[in-house]
Amino acid sequence: MNKKSSVLLHICCGICSIGSIQNLQEEGFDVYGFYFNPNIYPKEEYLKRLEVLKKLKSIFKINLIEQGYNYEEWKNFCTSSVDYEKEYEGGKRCMLCYGFRLKKTYFKMQELNLSFFTTTLTISPYKDSKKIFEIGKKIGGERFLDIDFKKRNGFKKSVDISKKYNFYRQNYCGCEFSMIRK
Image (cartoon, rainbow, N blue to C red; front, side, top):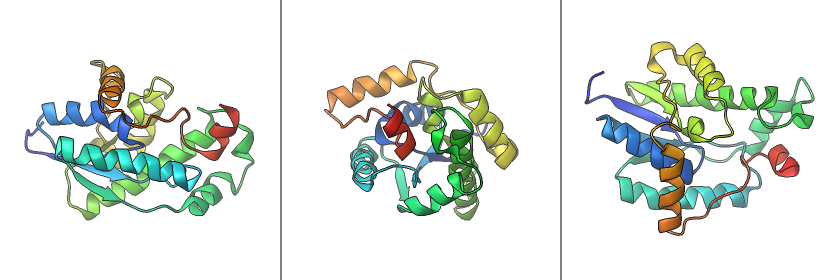
């Protein structure tokens, strides 16, 4: 892989981005962070996560793009045809949500003329990286980097740095439905 390649990193929250950014920078990538998470509920939670990310932006010297908050668009997309609201985390609604956010990330990568895209979602011990890889590859083919950020202690690094800086850490994935079921 070209060491001067650029990557658009979909970031679900500031904490999850720590190990992911470190990993990508160690691999020689020019990292652009993309905070696109209309699934996060309520808006105050979205803003708390964004605030941590803004602090990390200066620590890790990354470019940061915030897409903006449009919860209704996400909710309509993920619940319009089938009643996915009752599913637990990791079910079909989550797969739709991953696809929704990764597709937007793919289009933003193309718009910015970057080399690759990937996501911090794989750093979570609660997310199925294999399913996320399948979705990312279906959307972007070889331009999707299937990196499991849990490896090389990515999640532990994120937790340790968040404690060091006393960053806000959430206790649910972010969507209204996971909040109800936590």
